[in-house]
Amino acid sequence: MHLAYPAVLSALLFCTGLYGVLARRNAILVLMSVELMLNAVNLNLVAFDVWLSRTAEETLHSGQALTLFTIAIAAAEIGIGLAIVLAVYRNRGTSDIDRLRDTAEGHEPDGPDSDGDATAAEKAEATA
Amino acid sequence: MSLASLPLTVAAPETHGFLSPTGVEIAFLLVGLVTFGAALITVTTRQLVHAALWLVVTLGGLAVEYLLLTAEFIAWVQVLIYVGSVVVLLLFGLMLTKAPIGRSPDADSGNRWAALTVAVASAAALVWVVVDAFRTTWIDLDGPAAGSTEATGASLFQNWVLPFEALSVLLLAALVGAIVLSRKAKAESASPPVNSRAVSGGSPSVPDSRNHPIRRKEPVTGTRATTGSGSTTGTGSTPGTASTPGTASTTSAGTAPGAGSATGAESAAGAKPATAAESAEQEGAR
Image (cartoon, rainbow over all chains, first blue to last red; front, side, top):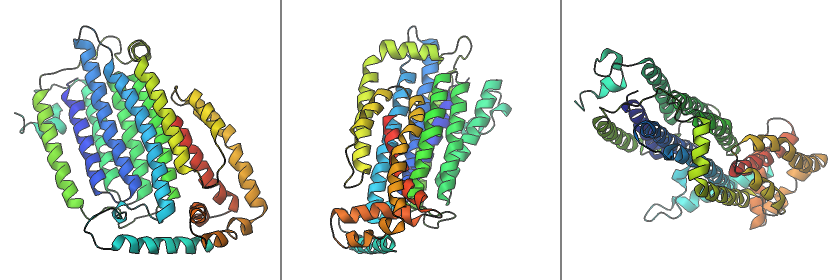
């Protein structure tokens, strides 16, 4: 198999994930795009490991070992990331990363205002 | 050659004599097109749940690509962990944050065109460099599989033992972090699950799926306490605590997603955050 096939597919998937990370608004969709980017890297690692295990004299199968490590770290990352997103949602009532601007400098005072609205709506839901 | 051959490399190499595709290459190309298309739909669709479901197609397509590259162990790990648990966890997250079912008009933020520009530019640069660098490189897929379970296991436990153990420590840290982040304000200590998860954390996913129905009994009993007293305990006590600031507001917010998204019984509403916390810590163990 030509090595360009998995390499090109991996590059395209990575850039698709890059677009998703930059363009999405919901934090969980951003996490999905991060998963896409990690999978693109995994495909690259596997392809180059298969290629090098034929051409090299002696191989450690480092590509496949690193792929397994990446998968495990991605699973840990998605667990922690979702826990953070749920904590943010619990406190703010939203998971839109565009509205989490409390630490931004020089922006409009939109952050505390929408924050107050969100907590008010959330308390209204809790009492309903 | 480089820029001119890009569309041919991606789209239709079987008409291009330079590559002279084999059957494996054609299969890889077709599955790759499906994978890439599903990835595009994943990042562009306006229905949030559909994005997670198209992500399943993308990850499954990548598992097939691993199989075509003779990396069978990686392929099955991909199916088990990504398709089996990560997507399920993402769906749990979508439902717990009350993602709208159906089309949501604000799925994309305002900097969409800047993101598209960056992505297309980086894709063009990467594909150009990669094709130009590896245009005379071929993978030899004949002979014994390079990524069989035997080869992967031997190399993993001969040469990669120390990173493997360090990874288990990292998974333990992620597990504890997920529990700390996702527990309620007055939750009791969760140290027995920590120990049991740490034992099963090294092996990918089979013991967790076996542990899951056993561990689910705890939130069921906890839920039964709330359902026994009915909705007056679950939601009736929250106005009193919601009026007080501090930790009480976080507990009332914690019950809010389950109670808000309840379509039917109260028990389902109570069990939903509990099972989500369960799956979160299960994912941390993995």
